Image (cartoon, rainbow, N blue to C red; front, side, top):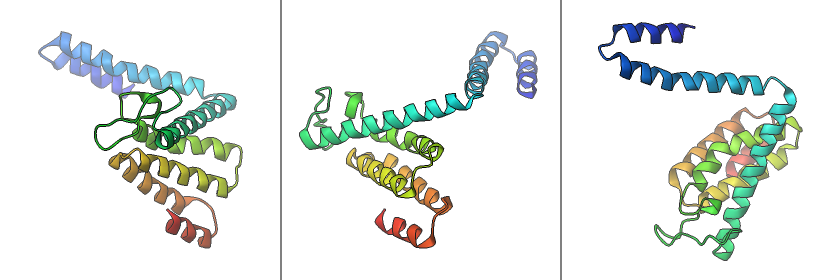
Length: 171
């Protein structure tokens, strides 16, 4: 309500009402999107299903990138990019965004693993596998973001201290 009130005041104060109203409607779509997402997640089954699909898409993309790394072609027949040192794109074709995609959805896939109460060892293998795949894509910023996020995750996950030390050393 406060946000809408500020937008209305801004529309009355501005010199160009049309451009301000157009920009305000552009911001309004985010409020509608947020409301739709909150409505979708009201039921537990929807949340669980959503995070399950995220986990499977992350595993699919990472497996496709691994196949592309080993054989030079992925499942869809897309070859490795010859530019920039044989970078891997996975199912994204000419777009070299596989590492960024995996780094942003890495922890959303973990949420499903916590829903089904998976063992910490499998969670560790999942993170290690995805960090390796992101490293293979040769996207520096995606790898650094994932690495720092993993360290922070390992600090706050409930495990024994010896296991945390082992995780830090392995990663």
